[in-house]
Length: 502
Image (cartoon, rainbow, N blue to C red; front, side):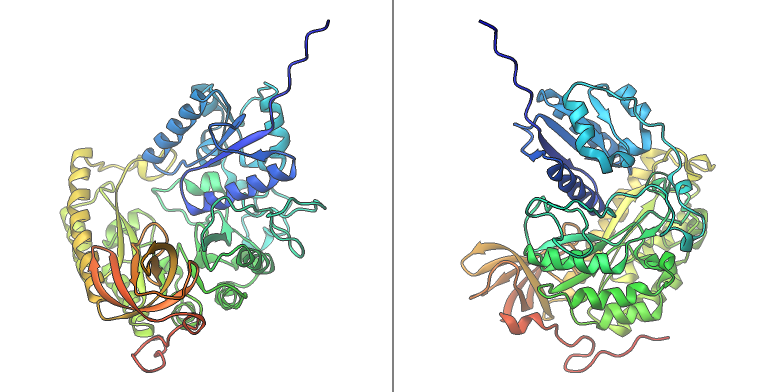
């Protein structure tokens, strides 16, 4: 009697996402493509393949990505590395980590067949990394029609029968399958970056800047709303550049009201704003458009003009202070956050004093402090004046302590303020955890809302802030239900907001 033939492994895959919200969108594209190709999503304990969407931004993120890949290999599943670390290092990563099959962004379009090959035990040579900025024309206006490789998160499909839950069913059909629930979701508006910051390697592996068409974004926003999403967080490498390759450098000003008008969407938030590209008209849109959070995620990076010039960036303490003053004239309660790098090559005590002074004066709601580390292939890694890592760590600790004090004071300043809070978690007894307009997901703190009756997760309520604990707030409901979805007047209490200084 012939022995039974071994059954082929099940086509099940677990997706692990590391890094930023842009990677979350990329993973949801991969999930949609895999389901369309007949793969079934599973948890990492039962999946036959574990696909890790890696981060390759800084050393800590790289180490986390490698650890996740090694942990996945111990489960006995086939392991696939995708994402930024895989794209950036390609063949080198494959040689050093034979446990994983290493894929490029260019493999995403055929991800189903690539995983079929992995499951069958085939191993293809990993890609040789190259500068992805060269894949698109230098002139931004020539990029949308160029036949170059498509970046992750921009894919549209002609597949006739998509499984349920893949966006959208008609119109511009962007491949996406939500991997996380909740009333908040990122929406990628563009990929890549044309800036040449001396410390950053991202443009080399993410490519030149490319906007997504606004009709695709509005259609995807509608699909997300039908999935229960109530807040859209617009993400990219540089949101202020949106539209420059589509012939309209002010297209973000038009996109924001269109997204806010999508039925079911309560709030639209923009991340990754470049101070050098901020315009009075954009400030006005962010500060006064109903349904758009008056939230300014400004990438300052430092406050010393000398250090910023070495970083190949714009500004100094005075100019950044003037920009924040313009924002607050337009909307006094506007939220503002930024990240800063200390220990950049050549940073002196005088430069550090400028940064200390700016942090003390700027009244930022959220502050991230990072120590400089060399990134391969960047201009900064070749500069003189490298600082001792022990000194960098000392500066990080000092500035982080100052940042904590500043953020706690800013939260205390909001006591008595009325805020609009999107409810995200039911804590029981009429209490909810949510976020006010100045609080972005995961990075800017939360608001605990008390006395919320007759509401549910995903609702927007107006609440008066009663206490602060670091960046976190406590607030009591003053209005809930459908009426609360209409944003309160911004600006002077009881009146219309003043226009921004020009």
